[in-house]
Image (cartoon, rainbow, N blue to C red):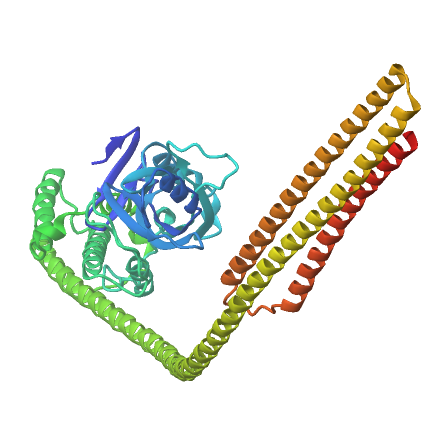
Length: 607
């Protein structure tokens, strides 16, 4: 009995592995195989960067989906291409029409898909098959529908730019019309020349149905998840289900057809009253059904809704063949009028015919199975030869790579020996350079000490010379002063003799006082210039010492670098500096002497 789910009637036919969907079982009887393949997942690195910002370390994603109550998880290792192949396939087989199947997918069936990182959902999607189905009249001209597409996940709890690419999944949706049972309802049975001896099963049709069912992979229960379909593999459970279904279906079809045919042709023999006909019909039906049901187990008595409906249709559509529709012959044998004997004979012949047909059908199935196994063996041999050729190619490639690896290893060893030799040469050169630098630095230190000593000697000599010159100048100035004083005394005596007045003497005294003040100022200026000169000489000496220290420091830092020391240039610069200092001092002295001479000339002019 069908169960209603959201106003869509659904039933699981466990015996044949089908799911019947539809509100009208007499019409919704096409068999569809629906397959969905998840090819690859893309654009997951942005999600991983967001997770790393929250101080979570991970190196894998989890692709999670639920199918018919069963959960499946696929782990994807992070790579730089940001493309992860999964190739996960799920499939279902429905007994329905395309219109009812679309309604079922819209109201009931969907697949929830999620992406996990560190056991946390970062994206989800609800896959609805109703948007993938073709038009209702698509399978009138074709038996297979395939659609390639991509869906994008909805991110959760992440503030990302809408322009950034979302995680996506590429998929392949395919739908195959396995058998079209709705077209078989209009078949009409032609007249037969005999009661049942000429009736045979269409082996080609049975083989076609067999091949269609061999390619299906049916679930045992609604909550069981199927493995991905492999066209080169047939499970024993699927084949047993198919044999049981086909045996029951053909048995009931032949029983209904032949019994109706026999009863129709022998209606004249059973021309009795209505009461006798009722009494004879009931045991006949019981006897017809008893041996048929006794030859099979209880499992074979459980029929699908499809078989029952097909039997009812065949019985309803059957029309007995009237005598005027057949050729009339003359039978000279004595006519047997005993209905029970005739019925038993018919039943025995029916059983024999059924046994022959079942044996013939089973032999056909065995032959098909042998042929199929032979094809599988042939395909396996082809695949094995292809794989063997690929393996040989891979082995040759591995040998080539191994030879290249050995050659590279030998080159690395030779380069390592050369590197060791160069290292030893570099070490010896480095030792020689360090030794030569040490000798040069020692020579430089000795030269610097000698220069310092010479500079000190020159400084003392110049200081002594300057002191001597100052003493000589002071003595000459004393002599000049004595001469001046004598001149002034002589002038005073001369003035006393000339009898100057008091006013004239006061003027002369004032002039003398002015001259003495000017002389004192000159002496002060002389002392000031001497102090400035000594200060500048000391500062110059300090600057030279700091310069030498800086040069020593730079030489210490540049021990590893070869530096050309120009000692002659340094000495020449020092000599030029000394000469410039001497010239400057001489210039200052000349200025002082010139100023003194001008003062003395002014005094003489005043006198």
